[in-house]
Image 1 (spheres, helix red, strand yellow):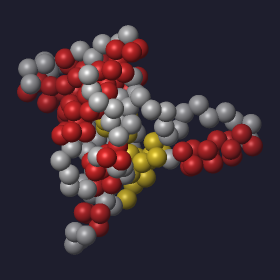
Image 2 (image 1 turned 60 degrees about the vertical axis):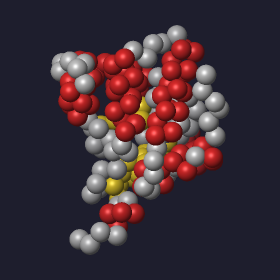
Image 3 (image 1 turned 90 degrees about the vertical axis):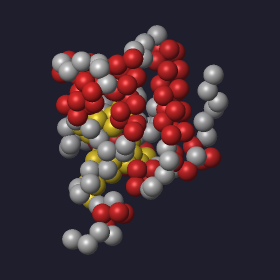
Image 4 (image 1 turned 180 degrees about the vertical axis):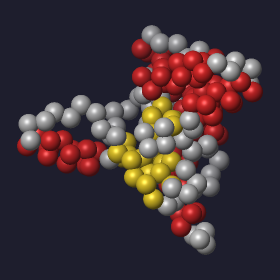
Length: 173
């Protein structure tokens, strides 16, 4: 049984610098997979070998990957090369809150806080396409307040910020 994970004890889990800092995130990957197993079991869902492998692929790097990138990796691992294989696994992982879809990139990234009620914002590097997940609760609350003033009920928000990560800022143009 996995031990309770405390992100403050894990340098690799301190978002948003998680994706932008050089770190060994093997522990965090292992923890994320254990949490995914626990979350899916608790909801009666099943983390099949294909679904688990897709999540592992997304956890390996902090870059968002498109469905066909995931499919290519699955095929090289012997899971087949039919697009529905990747799309169904990604759809399941998104529904379970284990993966987020990055609209701007038409790609997917593993959730940094699976199973937690949170309002993520995605910091996307326009050069290297690294993606960091940051907390955006205050921005979401502000948006919901303004929407309420207009009589609008926000059901879902996605905040994506495009810019340069620390490494790309320091690289000469």
